[in-house]
Image (cartoon, rainbow, N blue to C red):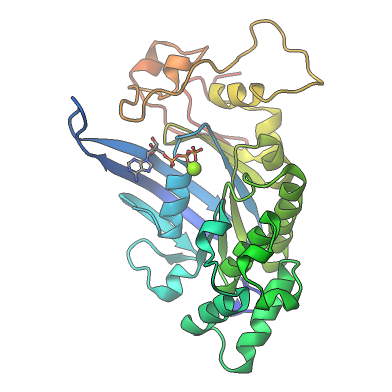
Length: 331
Ligand SMILES: Nc1ncnc2c1ncn2[C@@H]1O[C@H](COP(=O)(O)OP(=O)(O)OP(=O)(O)O)[C@@H](O)[C@H]1O
Ligand SMILES: [Mg+2]
């Protein structure tokens, strides 16, 4: 049974986030010399994030990370598949109480904070409109939320311009937590901050995840941060999750040639690259024209004939899931 603690939702039997066969397809209108067509931004994603743990989602720009996040959050389209939180299916009916279960922390908190309103009035309104607190408890909870993200309760009377970028992101997190979610989606939530502030905000997100028993989905271009803080990682390529597994395992023994190339593309001063080591060349193909077979085959250094015609299905090997024809026999 779920139990609301006031700092989030905890309880025995909470299973966290489950995503099954999620598809997101956008219709692209006709353009100059182009017929109307479709972009399959997310192509049958399966994910599980236990309560209290974190999943990193990585992949090149345009691979579908934000489409996946928005679909899970209920702020973007879902073409098919299911999203469940704490065992409750959200795809078919997402009323206000269900919608609260998943909250997003955006990259740019400034654009979503009303410059004319104080932080206190914004938080109080959220708590009241959603019926989470009444009377004096509204003020107490607003102060508690700010303290939870490391800001003093005295800041409740200030407007957004009074805060630094990092502090505004803390306010964005407080606003998400106000709704007592079970799942927090952080889509490039720290990318706009300077490096030292990034570290502090990432640390905050991960402390909150542990303390409040949240499932955290952390989308980032920064593989170093993902490695440092996420329990597991999903690697996306052209809308498909090509590899997924526990973080250390995936970083130490990446199985999919794309994961290997992605990790290899990270500049490292402590490693001398052997000549001919796998490097990602070129841009991913247009999502309007996804290659047949394995979507990675035109860039894959080890592709075989079958890769051009047959889409690989995910296979699980030692807790790691990989979609590549070279597995389970690969090396
Ligand atoms: N509303 C939309 N209509 C049509 N196509 C869209 C829409 N939103 C995204 N796309 C397309 O879907 C694909 C996935 O986009 P998405 O923003 O999810 O990628 P991303 O991995 O978040 O990229 P980035 O790392 O740059 O943020 C891209 O080809 C993008 O152009
Ligand atoms: Mg994005």
